Length: 509
Image (cartoon, rainbow, N blue to C red; front, top):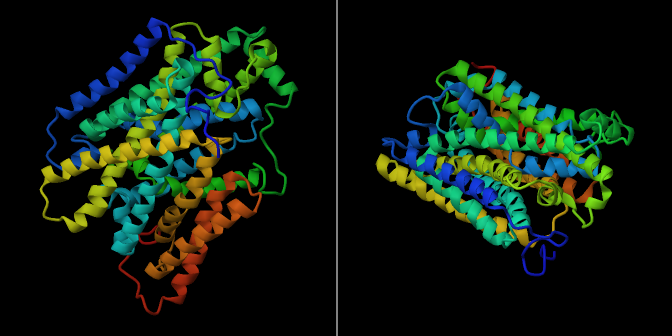
């Protein structure tokens, strides 16, 4: 594919506007506060690697819930959802309730099982349920998904916004974003990540609300008129019971709901907040309230996209240049907001990325040290493990930054859709493995390996040879792993006697 522009600079169709001194000051203050939190957290003496990944003391449940929210919502949502609803309607809205309700079910059904195992990473469960080979394979896939996919995309989106606003080369913007986040995550560990998550969540949601009220104030009739125009034009259409999975229908979201239960169970970055909670009750509160916040913020992002459509429908002369795909929100920021507010909204774009990015970096380091290094370096000191954790965080940040730069060179229609496809292809395998472990007593190692292979092949075929909705891909990936893995486990059951499963499945608690 062709690069974003002939020189890798600001995307075609956008004119960079110089920021006012106040905007620069606000952005500088925002980055400085994040780095300051990282520096302050690094001064706390860490005695164990577990403290680096789960904190040196128990964090209040409402803080971990906000951190859970900041981890689950990223720039993919902050920019991708408004772009989607600006260009289309609310047919994608069902993804929010489906995922959040699934997360609430995760908190109710599975948090108790995982909390009682006293783990640092959720992949420890797989070794206890199956064996070390399964643990390392699935943990490796998780690292590949985070470093090669999620972290790269969530850095790219706000970097495009910064390039649009400031005129900076997009690659320079990516480097700045990646460097600041990597530094504070590397120095401060889990506590720095959680504390900055609270700041970032407030900035992210606050900036979206500010933008929304600014738009409503510049549309005659305000919110009532805005929603009336959107309704009359069919922009609020959100439910379809059509018997198909090629478009976002109720049946697609039912599948998404079932798949997301196990996606959240297997997500180390999310489950780290649950594992860091004081007890089982606060762990459940963390997961449940985190998902309530995700649904609330997601709904706001959908409204922002519709509000942008109404604004430019009311003022068509202001959409003089093409503003396609994921770039409509920064286009609005550049051309419409007054000095000061531009800095606030751009800080919100950065916050949306940095919360999810820092959590993914800390989770990746936890996987490297706990799942891989511990098996081969069991005699290493805690200081050596903490040093490896920081080096892993640095390496993850550098690789993700390089991947984001590569994606900036490509021309992608919707980064949200691309991310969902990649997440389903790789990320649908290991949630299926967790489901086999938690829901069945007969699943064994050969069956799990067959399930992973079948899931990869079938999901790839569906993505490239059918018109199935991207929202349904994860369901196909996970449940093909479950079905084929369970069937293969029955075939090999005579060669692999059942392990002691007390406390490892829903049926043996």
